[in-house]
Amino acid sequence: MATQNRKITLSNGKTYSATNYQINSVALSNGGSIAALADVIYDQYRLPVDYYVSVDMQALVEMVDNFGGIEVYIPGICPTAAASC
Image (cartoon, rainbow, N blue to C red):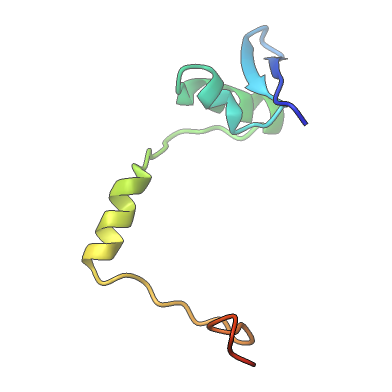
């Protein structure tokens, strides 16, 4: 399915671009505007966004790696494709 640019019109009359009506695309489609995303969240769900944090995901990966990584144990999952569980 092709990605389509669409417009979301809020109850206050503001209009924002979005991709396939995905709420997370509002910020990306409007120049990275978190304020646009906050407007849509409030308009659609009546949830005020008072504060937010932007995370540089590559920096987060490097920070976790510097601390030695994260081990995750999931019971019932084979560690390798060749292993029989």
